[in-house]
Length: 239
Image (cartoon, rainbow, N blue to C red):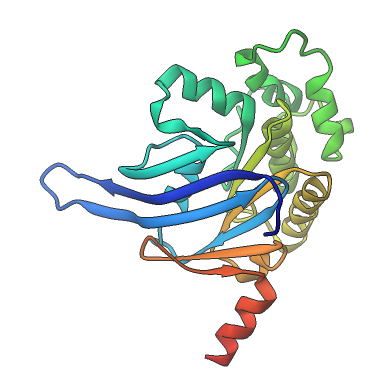
């Protein structure tokens, strides 16, 4: 990864879930990972491999059971609930498979929602600018039911971008889309990466991961490979 600035550093991260009356479930096991600022990283694995748990840890939605998570050199373990919420709002944008749009509000109102919790001195025009950046300048007043699946996901991406976060986390963002819409969404992520955004894509689909500059594979909560998608694909074919 050269001498680029490290944004994310995971050191021996583990996550264990306990269920009432059930045996503990180890979702992540000794995960160590570095992601540089401006990288486009795919995290791949089968269902149950731990990739969504890893995204929740990266996005400060869940705390690891052990190990350290440094975000721009800051150990986030010592932060309280309010501090974590402020950090998420300011630094991290989320895109999910289910678009999670409010059905009775316009595209613009959905995009502006994170701004309600922002400490920015001025938020005027940010929502419209975010929608313009994903090609929906002409859909600001449309409700989700008036938009296609691909357009709804673009609204969700605009919402994730409205606070101009350093890090964008996308969990199976094309899972509910047809092939054409999925390609459009991946083009947006590639454009964001080219513009300098750090993007982490969680997917089970190798064809989507091939769009990333680097792919990390998880199996049973462990990192089993980490490298350029072409190199990993060639290694799988050789084996």
